[in-house]
Image (tube, rainbow, N blue to C red; front, top):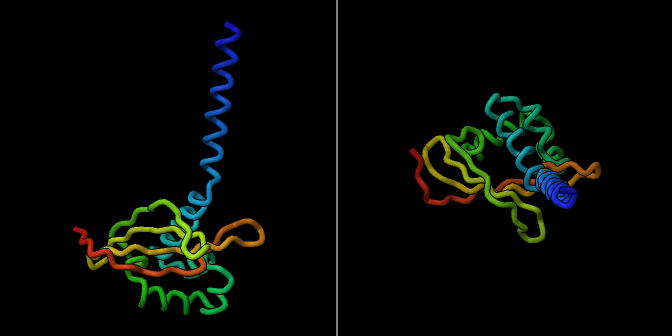
Length: 139
């Protein structure tokens, strides 16, 4: 039985190690940041939504109010999505990018490409978003 116990123990350590490493992948961190911002937007909580933006984005828009005006006017599918789903993270021109499929309030589909930027403290923030229509229609 000791051999069986050692094999089982080794298997459990391997499974736990894989689980821990999957939980620490950038994709999971990206998802937490993006979902945090989407949830803040759904509450019209500009201060929190603005907090997920990179320092360069914050410098550009200067205040949460200006940031929210831009989001409301130019990013309606992200501001008020009917639904959204995450795809696998990718590299675009050397930048960590998280694609997210949205069905906007008008029922039209877009893929939002979130450029993610690692901060000095190791955290991730959103460094920009571009929207790409998919031709998809939602209900």
